[in-house]
Image (cartoon, rainbow, N blue to C red; front, side, top):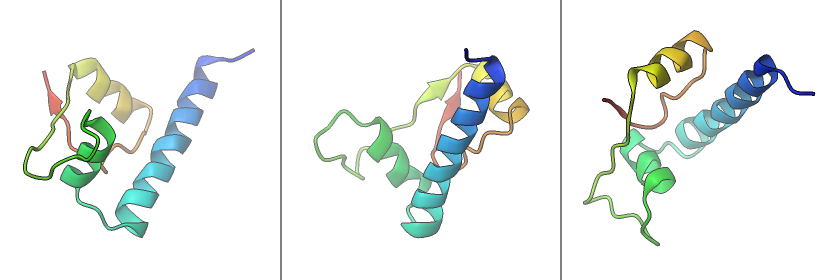
Amino acid sequence: MWFQDDAVNAMRGVHGFLSYFFKDKCNYSKSKVTGLLFSEDLVPSPADPIIPYYANDFHNNMARWNIDVSYFRFGKL
């Protein structure tokens, strides 16, 4: 049985690893990471920046659950 806390802990772990990998190990910019993760192109172009937008609930929940999403760029709706 899974509980909500299990999902939040898993998400925290995944985003923590992605932050460590992209920021600390690869030294990628937020724009490059966002392009890699969200582009639908076979090879993402740095000339065409991608910025996903999320509702305020997303931003509030990430902060409330202490999930590090500082490694990619996103906006608010």
